[in-house]
Each structure stands twice: as structure tokens, then as C-alpha cells.
Amino acid sequence: MKHLNVSKLRTFGYKSALLLMASSLFVSCEAQKKETLPWTDLFDGETFTGWTQKGGKAIYEIRDNSIVGTTVSNTPNSFMTTDKMYDDFILELDYKVDPSMNSGIQIRSNSFPYYMNGRIHGYQIEIDPSDRAWSAGIYDEARRGWLHPLDDDNTKAKQAFKQNDWNHYRIEAIGDTLKTWINGVPAAHLIDTQTDSGFIGLQVHSIGKDKTPGTEIVWKNIKIITDDVQKYAQKSPLPAINMANQLTKNEKDQGWELLWDGETTEGWRGAKLEGFPDKGWEIKDGILTVLSSGGEESAAGGDIVTTEAYSDFELKVDFKLTEGANSGIKYYVDTELNKGAGSSIGLEYQILDDERHPDAKKGNHDGSRTVSSLYDLIQADPKKPIKPIGEWNTAYIVSKDNHVEHYLNGAKVLEYERKSDTYRKLVSESKYAKWPNFGELDKGQILLQDHGDRVSFKNIQIKTPKEDK
Image 1 (cartoon, one colour):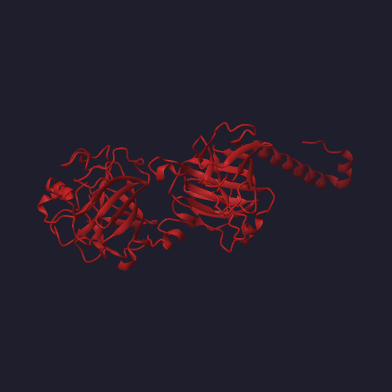
Image 2 (cartoon, one colour):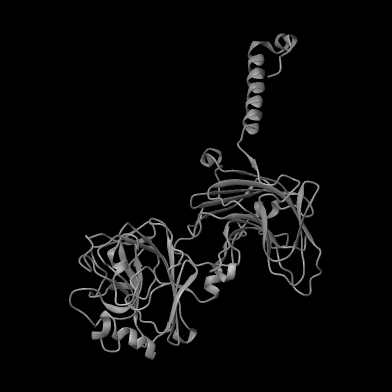
């Protein structure tokens, strides 16, 4: 702290001097606080050490301690990505973009061989110099599309973007919460559980044949905090948008509908009841959970089914296992069959803790009772990308013209032809052999199974052909 001039003490008097000293001390402490923030530079200003280009073949070069990305024709979206993966962090950077470009900052993003042949996917913090002005909004690259655009109510953030000048982003990813600021103005506040870890990437967007290549975007001062992030996080005055049990605009445009609203039992009933079970199931905080009853099948609330029946469909369900748990998603269910003890009959996407539940080693076909398998009929790919117990996984089932596919977390794990000779042979060798025409209904209900173990579900959505609506 600087020394105070004695003459100032006489001039201002004792109280004024104390105020001046306090003010000086405050400024000094604030400066020290800023200087001691645990920032780590992601870019050394001279090399691409710690970075790798993925996707397209746009040009990335280093100029004046900055990364410069330049558009190239006839190439997909390009990304300069960190080699290191990040979960919780605070990221700040500066960028300057050509007014004709669209770009973005990827966070918690990934590239897996099983997902669209390695296509980059994950959260993107938008860079949008167009009149739309959605810079710092949150987009889901190669997945769900727009999650948090900048609506007309947030005019301050829309107006904060500086054309043909440097802009500053602050991005916080902590737990299930993503927050962004553009030039100090709060822009987006999102709650989502789709991805909790991944790389950071600088995007050069692909351009159409009518666009002239050679436009540039420049990034600099790229730094990150990864330790004690809660300590350095900032509050956002914006209300959080929670994506649980919500459809994005892209999903609505594609014809997806919620099969469960996240709050009520509407559209569902007990498989052997006229209404929804009064025990054994819990709806809390946007999560539908079948409660534990000691592992006995349908001993508490019993299975639940949709009140509607479906022919061709695409179904997505997020599920979370507990240790040793067993459950399933059944389709083409006829609740009039097997009205006695046990579960209702239908084709089953198995949900199981493969490591701890003995059922994983049983079945008439090797491995056909493991997670995401067609239960007791076809084993899922053993290399399937299952997440640890306690984390959310996504089941995706497609049935079209009797061709059926199972996916787990974006990876296709099996496919088969319903009603084919091969399929019927599998059935004849399984526990379902006693049920005539098993799994061959033209239309059936969707079922969530009560197998006596605690398993949770959310984001249950379905897409059916237009002629079925």
C-alpha cells in the first residue's frame, strides 16, 4: 500500500484520512485478489502444444500471440481442441470474428468412433455476429440443437456483442449448471445433465459453395480455472432454464413428443391396473423412480405402461441404475397376456448392473441379459459405452417396418428384424417360446419395469410417423 502524505491528513482531518486509508487498502486488496486467481493459460501464445485439430480441414495458425482460424471450402465444421478433458471449470477468452462468420466455443465435447463416425458433439457457446445476435447462447452441437438461445427479453446481452472488435466471454461449467457472460453481461443460464466432461474446442464453421473462403476468427487470452471453482463462480441474475423433461425447438420440429411430463402420471397406468400404482413408484424433482422392494419382480407397485399403443416409433429414455439393480424398457407389450404374477410380456431393452447382478451371466443366448441387450434373445455389443452406477445413461430404440435397433449413449449396440425366421428361431430357444407370436404385435404399449430394484427415469420422449398422429 502506498504511504499517505501527512499534509493530506491535516487537510482532510482524522475521519477523512481513515476513509482514504480504507479506500486505498480496499483497492490494494482487490488488485491482489485478482492477481492471485488460479488461472492457467490454455494457449502459450506461440505453439499448439496441448491442442489437436479435429473434424474439418479449416486452417488454424498462430499470429501475434493469437489463434487464427480461417474458413476453407468443401470441408465440415473444424475444431481446434484441447488434448485435456475438463469437467468443472471457469473459462475466459477474447475473440474477434468476421461479421459474415458463425462460430462457437465447444465445452464438455467429445469425439467417439461409435457416435456419427467420430463427429464432434457437445455443448457449444455460440459466436453469432448476425442480426439475430445470439452470441453466448448455448447450442448442442450434433445432438439436440438450441438449448438456450438469447430470447428477446435479454436485449442487454444481444446488444453487448461488439462488431469488428474484440469480445470477451466468461463461461462457467459447474456440475449440471452452465452460465455465460458476454463482455460482462449475463447471457445464458442452463441446467442440463447430458454431458459432464469433455474437451474445449475453437470452431471454424463449414461454409457453403456460395461463400468465399478465407474469412477469419481470432482467439486470444484463453485461460481456465479448474480448482475450487465454486469459490470463484459468479452469480447470474438470469433465471435458469432446466432441460429436464423438456423438448428443444429442434426436437419439436422433428416430431418428438414427451411421453412423460416430468410431474404427473398422465399417460401412464399400472400394467395390471386401471390407474397408476399408489405405491412402489415415486415422482420427485422431475425424476420417475421405481422403488426398491428387495429385488422381487413386480412385488410392489408393478410395471407401468403407456395408455397409448404404438406401431413404428423412436423412443428415448434416460435411466440411472443403483448398485445391483435390474429393470427394463419393454415395447410391443400386450397387458392382456400374463395377467398373473410377474412382469407383463413384451420385447425388452434390458437395464442392468452387469457387474453386480447375476442375471448378466444367465440367459438362453450368451450375454443376452446384459444392459441394452434384447433380453434373453440378442446380446448387445460388449464394447457398449455404459456410464458408471449413479450416472445417467440414454437408451434409444428405433422400430421401423419391423427393423429394430438398440442404442446406448449414442452407440448402436444391436439390430434385428422382427417377425423374421432368424428372430423366430431365437424366440423358440428362449424363455418366451411358450408365448405364441411373441413380440410380433403390430401395435403395443411401452413399459417401464418394476423388478424390485431402485432405478430412475427421465426425459422420456417418443417420435411416431405423422400418419399415426
